Image (cartoon, rainbow, N blue to C red; front, side):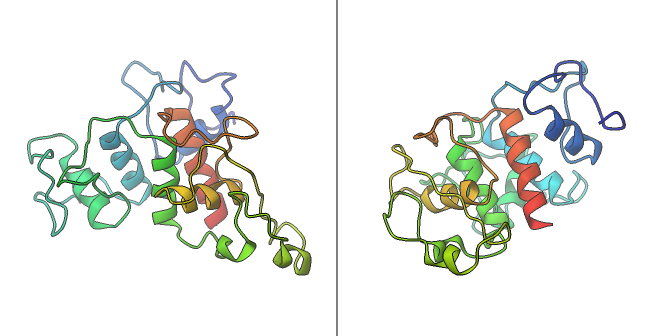
Length: 212
């Protein structure tokens, strides 16, 4: 940790390790005043920037006009985030919210973070669907019985606020199952709650670790 990037407001924070390590790799950054704002929320536009920086892009590599299928009516070429949004869309990492909108200035939710990470790493080493569900399926976990151990270990939880048909249901299942995301309590994931910058860093760090 002593060799990692530092910020004036992350010492002792629960997400300090994730924030400083990713910042040291140049995958995330703080603000001009030396802070990171770990408890601040972030917008969908900001998330598109962070996720594409982690994908190896800088602002000289971004599209200058909307790629096919990414021409959102609320994203203009003059917006600072336009190229990042278009790239995230073109890569299939972030989608619009319907009606031709990207909703760039709305807050990113925890369910959306899980969905983005699922778009990046759709397999998470193996398909967790094979492990039986964890939105309370009540089925015995036959796969784990046959293949116990950390490689196949897949956590299960009963979320009372994750509907089976929700767009984020499977991504949340995978993210928690592989240890990428945590719940907000023993029975809630809070998928519609705005994610903080610290939470985003933690999930991204863990997702990169799982992929590695």
